Length: 487
Image (cartoon, rainbow, N blue to C red; front, side):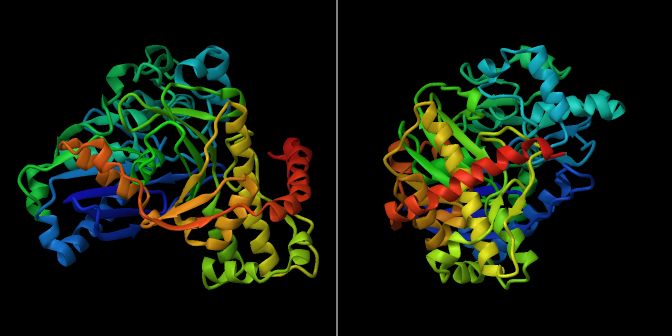
């Protein structure tokens, strides 16, 4: 039995996987985000631990016999977050998250100081990454910055609590803007831009390697065996790829989670910073991947559902699906930049916009506009990947948004490729984390990293795609018209 732990932004998920690829149990606990100032996005690491404790207590109560068979734990998590620790490994301030936009000025300064940074790290300096957050701390919280002894990513802070060891792995470390992504090691040149050295960084392993062991006190508390290996694990998207069996060049997926991602697996380091495409290490040795990333995807649907007082996202989508083609054509446009944007705009100041509202528009029209706007944003990212040579014959679909067959068909039509939803697609990073745990204790890649059984396939509708093109062109023009107005 293998335990996958996925530290998301909105919840922590736990999953038990057996050696017949059966998901034995899942559970989770919710998390909230604090936004104390405009552009800020933070969480308290102590809340992550409390959520993990709650999830483990539930697993022990309901699946104690399965927990007693766990051989290894894998970790997955939200990328880029900055957990700053003092010399006693005490948290100095709330963690600054991946969708925090405060460090735009620091990004510009880093790029000016080191124009070759994207060739080392595979990425432009963007506020979402970890390094600019530390540059912001050095400028705006200098007293705290001088006390920083260690910087960890969110899932690796959990590892510290689980094991007492400060360790990260390549896929998550690639999202810090401190990693030499081609060489898979910390870059002294990139670290120096933020006044840090390798001594501030955790030790690095591959995601499928054993990293350390679970503390004996925790094995006793949770009813696990005496020796439980903790795998390196992966950033959320790399772990989701492992969970879908996306480990070979040409494989890819779309993630409709809090953020929206299109992920393509590569056999070499393939940066394309000019289009704000991310180039990261994969969670398996000797593999890399490219990603287009938008910062608000299923979270935009959740936002509009709550704003409109609808009972659930599914209920709103049901109303959207009942709209006629003429009603969809008359719906407002929506720019989905509720937390700024990465690919292809690299604009932390970008904001959400409804355009073209009238008295006739109700919840269904606004819900449609949001689903369409997020899909248009993903199409922007897909075109950026294609411009750099990225391609795939089909893409798997993962994340909470994968539950909607209607949204799947809309997105498949726009991207022009079939979208395949696998059995257990909602498990995402937690399933990948469990598989990485399996690999860490000797499981063969070919056996462990299977593609899942197919639950459904959304085929592109070329007629629907053609009808959407004029609205997509207006969507693009609307962003350009408003770009200089965002503050």
